[in-house]
Length: 229
Ligand code: SF4
Image 1 (cartoon, helix red, strand yellow):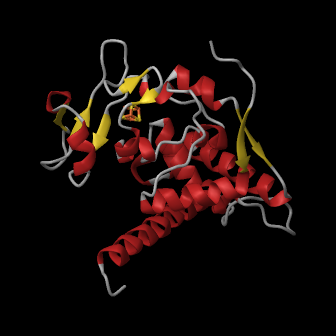
Image 2: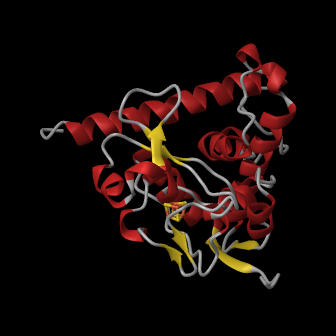
């Protein structure tokens, strides 16, 4: 039985910086999971990309099936009748060194950062135990901004083009990490957040911030592919 004591999540700003980098370049999250296997036992389908050949080689073919709606080569690893990934064992992932990128990038601290519940109870329980540290006011300001971003995304979907805000809590949390700087309070001003004064202005700034983040991510990928870059 899990004890409900707090779990050290690290300094907020340094965690945020690392997580944004990991989101931008798919470099994976360094999560102190300990003995927790909540995300491996919560009925998730795990997407595996075509270039993850070493991962696919570790998984029996009968456990993989074509990923719906994605190009050929994208596959999904399912779960058993108990909601457990077929690769999880008592002591954790049996293919840990070659686990899918989806698993490497998963960090349940995003829920604690955004102040929202996950879509699985086990993970919500775990996420609520994370305790960030705030060595400077900058850490607190950034955490407040991430929470404000998540709140805005959930409460003002109508301000976005076509009402397009992700419904999935993980995607909301990740988006909040990408666009949080829109919600950083001006240091010497009244405390108003966002670059604009209306909800629609703020939504526009959020869209712009997300596009900037994605453009940097795409530029990084092009640099990776271009040996001269
Ligand atoms: S592949 Fe490994 S890390 Fe990923 S869900 Fe399965 S057991 Fe967990």
